[in-house]
Image 1 (tube, helix red, strand yellow):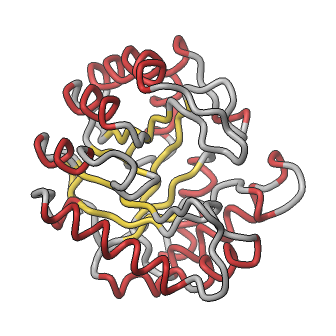
Image 2 (image 1 turned 90 degrees about the vertical axis):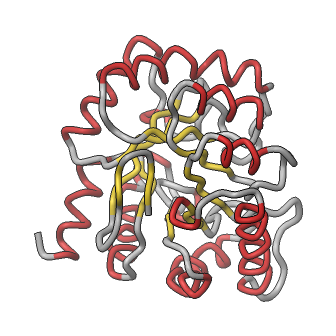
Length: 258
């Protein structure tokens, strides 16, 4: 897979979460504007292969902010990151307006939690800039019964939309959407069988870091997160999107033998 100028294959890489929000569910991931460069530098030193900027929390019960507010949160940090570091940067947004601004500033990928279905112009904008996209499964209503059919169908349709708009096949990665429209049991079923999604023909990204499916307090969920990362690495998932870079990089090395 290509993100920006970088090629990723045959390993499990870390996408480091940098949240520019005051309300993201894990306080440790929230980064103040004047601390962004320090956070990115640390993530790179600890082994991150790419950065994911989030300017809107999508935690359970979140209150949506406008595209204008989202842009105000990520504009300066994104500019400073691109000026100071040579690392692919993803921006987590489902607003086409936000995506256009981010891509015009040099963002390399859009991480889209609605699989290109929230804004009819999103796929065209990503294609226009020759960018990459992470297509995630989501649903307005909780999944009932079999989870695999709805997830695979949704992702197939979203991939078709991406291709029809001219997004290059080698710039598409899929996310099963752990924590979105799924019960705790369904989240674990998805996690355990995550490699089933490889049959769709695209690399996979897993986003399970410190999520509520692991129970307890968010600050105590690192061990379970690392287990999910080891599982992902054993299944040859291309990226894990995580809060704790160093620990997850080490977990991946354990699986790949250093």
